[in-house]
Amino acid sequence: MALLFRSSVDSAARWRDQLGRLTEALEIRLWPEIGDPAEIDYALVWRPEPGLLAALPNLKLILSLGAGVDHLLGDPELPRHLPIVRLVDPHMTDAMSEYVALQVLRLHRGDLDYRAQQEARIWRELDQKNAADRRVGILGLGELGRDAARKLKALGFDVAGWSRGEKAVVGIECHAGPGGLPKLLGRSEILVCLLPLTAETEGILNARTLALLPRGAALVNAARGAHLIEEDLFAALASGHISAAVLDVFRDEPLPADHPFWHHPRVVTTPHVAAFTNPATAAPIILDNIRRLEEGRPLLNQIDLARGY
Ligand code: NDP
Ligand code: OXD
Image 1 (cartoon, rainbow, N blue to C red):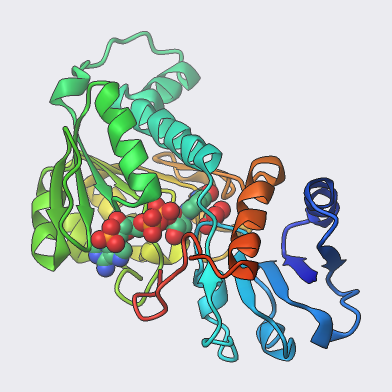
Image 2: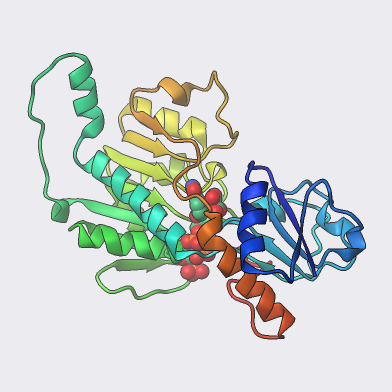
């Protein structure tokens, strides 16, 4: 059995070591040294070049190196008849919830204002709300959104979430579908985006939806840059309707050096690091799915191409 590893992130050696420690049955081939393409059974990939997967005639399964699969679905030659699985790793889920908690607390406790005051040597107490009086809304109640919602709830926040289908999550006010979106937005003083990028969710953070947030609301986008219409966020920040934004993901990554997000006083950026894929914890999960396929058992976290996630 042979697995092709291809990632736009420089992690190939770590993955080869990690997978090699767990199995001798799988020959790991690191792109571009793929040998005979007809010998490749599995492809473990992050942003593979379009056409690469279609050039593997005996491929059986495509495994995403991340939770998202939008990096695959843009390939016009994607072999759509093959199963595609995404990564769901509890350690990654914990990491995302840490990031969300950090940023929600930063916004809740006025950290940007205190940083600005420190810069200007101003000693002034600002208003302090209880977490129970702070309404947080989460777009996406999947693996990541549900965990973040529960952990924010445990910190005392008043949390609601939005998903495609109806959901019940203990302690969380749940909204669903297009009809539920205005309800979620209208109550969200801090809005967190944890949606997959699909045809339906692209550009969902736009002038119309931002306008539905209460005046002074703040945004955390840890999902995908293409969820956000950047010009609309700049306009909402300029008018004061949105008070601050924390952005981990961008339309262009790395964020271009001359991009205005870098020095906007009300924008915090991080370089797509909310939740890394960690070879040590992810490799056993990936191998489990390969074994499942070999043994004819159901795959875990297989995506639905029609839904796009
Ligand atoms: P899941 O597939 O588990 O959850 C997706 C959630 O979004 C589900 O609740 C789903 O609804 C909801 N959703 C999808 N489409 C719609 C829609 N049209 N309307 C309303 N709700 C919708 O994904 P994960 O939680 O595992 O991951 C979410 C995303 O986070 C990834 O796709 C990736 O883009 C991003 N991510 C970012 C990382 C980073 O470091 N910045 C790291 C990891 C992931 P339903 O439950 O009804 O299906
Ligand atoms: C992912 C990511 O989708 O890191 O896993 O963005």
